[in-house]
Image (cartoon, rainbow, N blue to C red; front, top):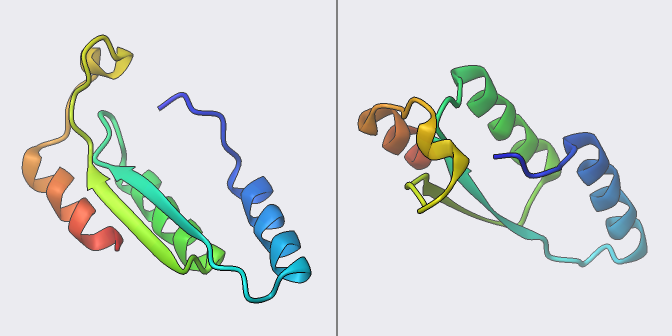
Length: 89
């Protein structure tokens, strides 16, 4: 998705926040089924969610956005996209 993120940095950040405020509640939202997403990348996402111990997780299947570069990429089959969405939360 070309969004700069580092799972390692985010996990370190979560650990630091929890050290300062153990009762913190952390939530995030994820997109699954992004064009070109591999099974390995999806499994990596699931691993990150488990390791991050997020309190609330939202997930939705990718849908095209006008003008997005991803529109030119090969799209995942709808069945795969929605199965990943269902399996991520």
